[in-house]
Length: 134
Image 1 (cartoon, rainbow, N blue to C red):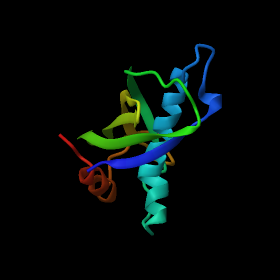
Image 2 (cartoon, rainbow, N blue to C red):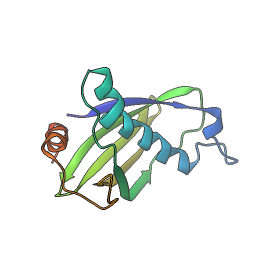
Image 3 (cartoon, rainbow, N blue to C red):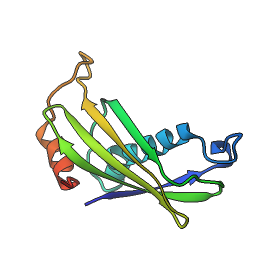
Image 4 (cartoon, rainbow, N blue to C red):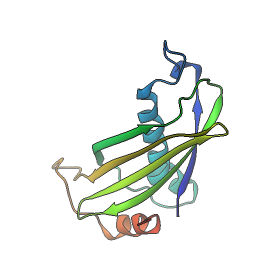
């Protein structure tokens, strides 16, 4: 299963080359990831998860430039790997113009007090396994 989010592509996301700046894709990913683990869960009356997690690694393949703002970008998110304290999130960013980018992040669960990595708990593993695509 995949989590689906929509991100507003704003005029402010455009750069001097007339396309969405590469750094904006990181923001799109971050916002949809926050919706996946936090805001969409609250909207469904569920406890938000991963209050403390960090990005350990990011990869983005820019496939088709976004040449305009003023529309909503479709972003699909799913999990491709689950470790002891980390997991891999995959992203696809699409519009009617096509597939703009594929990306991945390695997320690490962090202990709120020690600020060190910690094992994923049962509730987190349940959510991650629900969205796991091998």
